Image (cartoon, rainbow, N blue to C red):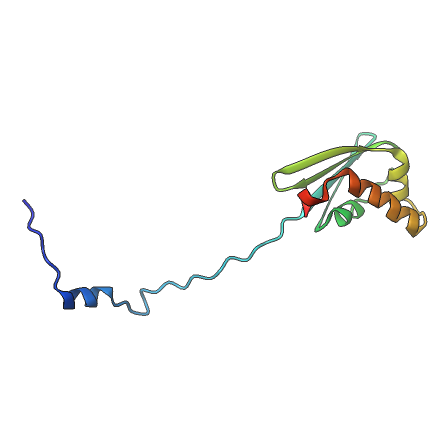
Length: 119
């Protein structure tokens, strides 16, 4: 049988006191914002880019081919969405057209994907 040792009150105080060596400095973790990854598939070619927002991720894609039906995939963490985009919208986003047409086409793609999921 083991004997139980009683700790006297003045001994307990000594055990509870900590020195500077015992204290661990805990720093809060920095939150890193997860980037949205975008891929565009046109005629068997794949183009990839990243961005903080949906618009930035799509505009960072620089396809060499912009005349055809495409599949745009957006990923953020475990969330992944794929949409088929018509040729005229792809042409308006990635070719030299007026800024108004570009923003209208970008808004069309933005509406394809659920903005609440990716923000």
